[in-house]
Image (tube, rainbow, N blue to C red; front, side):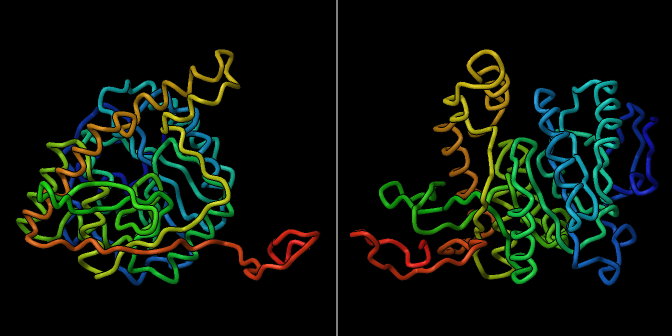
Length: 337
């Protein structure tokens, strides 16, 4: 089956198809290349999966197929950000993705023209929905939890919705912003799984004037922190923090702790899993946190204010009895019997 280049690919701005031929494409921020908001759907979502590692291709195919099977998904777009991947590899991947679409949602592949992390937030004519899911190629979530997260977004469309939360904080001793994790609050959700309004893609890529241009340059210099910058953009626009949702089953294959599971691929489970986690940014923990703390400081310096807002609690998809009853000498939730 030959790769079909849809007409919309010609307007994705700074992007290429899987072929090696390069053409000068229109500016994605030009108003003429923007879709009319009234034509966008509220009842479905577009999934943008960021792909980079060839080791992850089998996992990427599985994740894309799972999303395409949901009736709430309008389309799945794989954004390939590794410019050194051979064209033949991506041609085969494109064919396999087309064949693995189990639902009405199509799966397409777009090769980015560079490895810039900013490119995953480019506005695209191929996005026909108000909601967009930004996710990584190493995070698997069950369909029920994904659809619940989308419904949470529908009632909180101005906010970012996510499943992986982090926080900013101030180091009073050194008088600097830091990137951290709190048990009781959060202000950042990660692009491992992030649902947002598609208009925020335009604000990130095209709005904000000189300040946003400088902050996008910081993302390129650090090769990191595009998710933090999107949290800045949305918090500044909505004056509210993100919303964290719970998931019944979600697995982050990029988490190095997967190596503790000794099962599956013939070498104690450490073969494919270790290769997947090794290319994950978070596997370099200490340096990673320092770099992201530096991003927060730089974004704050450029913007001149701190827009990030704390949120508290997590939205869950089941409601159980909160009252305790004594059963057989033990206190348990009353609805357990």
